[in-house]
Amino acid sequence: MYVLLLFGALASILASIFLSGTTSVNNLVNWQSPIVNKLGWLGSSKPLPSISVPATWNGFGYLFNITVGTPPQSLTVLSDWAWVTLFTRSARCEGRYDPAHCVAEGQSYFDERASTSYSDQTALPRLRWDTSLYSPDFTVNYATDTVCINHPDNTSHICTTPQTTIQVSDFPFAGHYVPPVPFGGIFGLAPVIPGLNATYHPTHYQAWKQGRTGAQIGFNSCAKLSSKKFCHGGDAKFVFGGTDTSLYDADQVIWYPIVTPPWLGDEMFLPIKPSIWNFWATPWTGGWIVETLPDGEKRWSTNYAVPFPATALNKDFLPADHSDRKFRSGSPRYNSTELVTPLAVLDDGSEGLGVPVTASQYVELVRLTGGRKADAPTRAAIAAQWTSSTTGMATQDWYLIDCTTKGLPELVYEFDRRGNYSVGAEEYVQKIEATGECYLNAHVWEHSRTETGDATVISVGDGILKGLYVVLDFERNVFGLAPLKRV
Image (tube, rainbow, N blue to C red):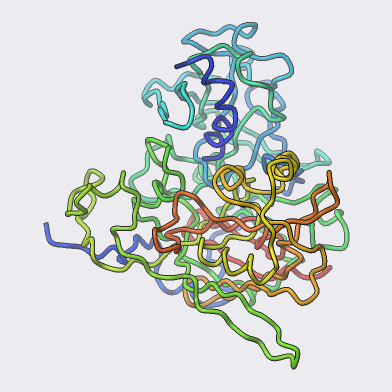
């Protein structure tokens, strides 16, 4: 999904160039049985190779290196837990292969003609996202080739077979219309739910299916650890095919089966068509602001994770009169009057920056922190340092607050009525480098905001996850969260 947000940020450049019975909405599609609720459950898969690699944060998200093709071509990729098949920037555009015309100076890309194992995948349709966010179509063809992930000391690697499906860009405009970015691909890590074809299959999922690696991926940030050595010198670390058990206690993992109702894609990012709704998502059942009183007692706010009526879903999802209809081929009809549980979606990219809050919760947090509305120059300074969601920057007001965190409230999040996670003020008091002031780095997800100030979805990113070890399990379609050890 992030690749579309990226091109949305370039919209101003591109725009100048291209002018049966009722079923419960709360019957969310749950892809795992309740046995995963048992703490410490790790499955029974046979051991397979795993590789750990460093990832570097650069404002877009976490970047790491892979190779594609034979002989291997190095490619820096952006991790995106909400994207699907590996996207590679190619030397194609406007329906033809032409590196000089299709690749901007300084932009890395995958050259399919230099790979002896490359093959066009004509069985899969050309896919195009035509959105209202930017004018040109985002267009990809499908191909197959080998993809490898290498340990940073080059002592080991995981490689897929040459039959691995990848996306190859074929944009309807010349390369120089899009400014270069510091990566040449998007490494999708979205879960694969039943019914999705190869266009939705991430590289890691394919590698696991090929028996080349384990089904799990472990992730941790080094922001709260004592040294970057725990991330091979990077800002974060991925373990493909396993986890780093030295950084968390297995008996503290809480497992969350994913829930993926078809409406989730429109709520997560409305302009993307066709929508992607296979996210690492779980019910969001609790959201509180917790103040510490002078006597040490805790004062809890109302719960901001409020079930919402189906009529609050985006109008592209429900018809104007909110009567029942089939919104996706083969999907059930929904009762438009029933209350729906909001969802929490994991997002490791820049759209997950800041602590997630509802619109009503944001108003209260501004009040409790003494927020003062930021003027235009301050907003520009905030946007320039890439420490907040790009969607939030465009759609919400921002507030200056004092830089001290003493006496400020914490935020508590509850998922699936089981796991509670506290976030201190240090996660939302953000310094503005250009001025030395601080602002309230809280994020109201625009596409999920209801008329009553509640939310259908929150985007759970770095503001919460940097203190947790995350396990993505492609075999069981569950994700696990555990407190990071303070090593």
